[in-house]
Length: 440
Image 1: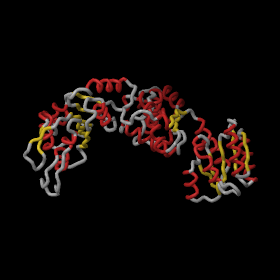
Image 2 (image 1 turned 135 degrees about the horizontal axis):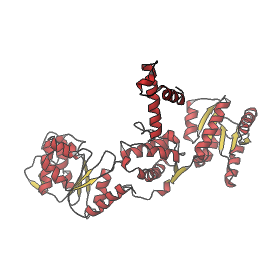
Image 3 (image 1 turned 90 degrees about the horizontal axis):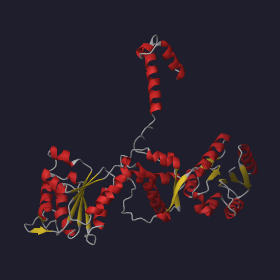
Image 4 (image 1 turned 120 degrees about the vertical axis):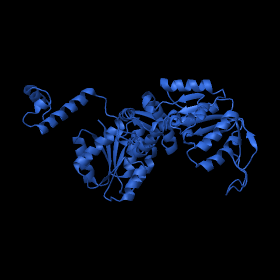
């Protein structure tokens, strides 16, 4: 049975708690102050027999509860400690949680609360988990991950097109990793020693974007008090990545078409034609073909961009990659937040795999980072996963049909209490059996 340590200088409370927990079947050890409790924990760790849960009073003579928490340090990620105090101030609670306490009890507390919190804390730390350590972060953060056939096909395509110089159009929903694809194409190409210049076409209004792309001469417009080299010139010999290409205005579309045709342009305020040696990669989450049909995007520009197409799958279409991505992101989050390791419960992983991820891989990363904060570095449970939209219902046909049948019977009873079976096309005996089956 789990072993529980109670550290409190109030003997009557300590003994009362011990009796309650022993009646629940737990093994209980008592310590009268922080020093004794800390020694029990440290000796238990050394002998491979540490407690499974600790109740720790914060206000004690000699060694205070906060001091015990500070001394335990990273052990708290593996050992749940529930702090207790009669002083229910927010500052005390916040400081205890920041130091790694699992939860907080304000005295006096009732029997039910004590037992429920004990069960919750033990279940949290005994649930089957996937664990990754911060030290396992070996892969390049600019590298894409995926074992699914869909992603393997993407990787193979990148391998085939990287060494060429063709323009590439990268398509995919927001958060699927279009910028990462651009980086991979560049870093595995013959241009990898030269710059990769990224431009978000949706981030700037037309006149600023034009100056950003092509540069401007001093005095070209109000506020142009110096010469500016544009992004195409900055990328000379390398690669230009145009993100959100579907947001370009007709004026910029026309000028970009010329760059794609002969790699030439003029700076704003200059008549001198300049040429550059760049490879162009473009990305969008919009349907450019529909935009062409509705005259929102130039057809000739579309065909110039769509020389080689890389289509990224949505995360919901490669569910088998969620576990791999989760382990990768948890290792990064552990390193970033200073945890020795992070773990996620199998039940939480199952919950992730049932969610449609409208924000794709980026949303998965954000959900996990938030969950790591909410769990305080302990195993991530289903309740720590906060989604932006409702989860997909379980695909259980029998349950769905049973629910539908019950709803129809209730509606029939409301609409015609005298002869509801006729509304449903059932004989009276069958209707009565159905009603009895569902206790309606």
